Length: 109
Image 1 (cartoon, rainbow, N blue to C red):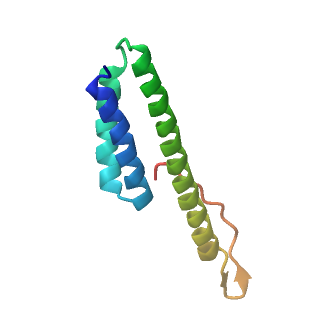
Image 2: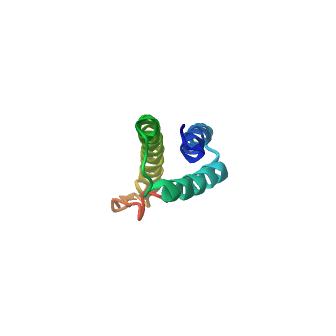
């Protein structure tokens, strides 16, 4: 029999994916917090072979969600660079403004 926490974790990852796809930030944070608590609870447990299979599925789903998050962050970073380029590459009084290469302080920004 598979322990309920593993099944809950798998379900939470699916809900997290849906929140990521919909850009529901508050929901993403809620599921991330719940996911962390479940993972922390499960971290030192022994698992049956059947549970190990569920864990493999969970890892796969989590990796997929990670890729969605990374794609979103890359999009935000590129949009930031594009906007910054427009703002800092304009001309003032016939002289070009010195190019500035702004950097994000954190990928989580």
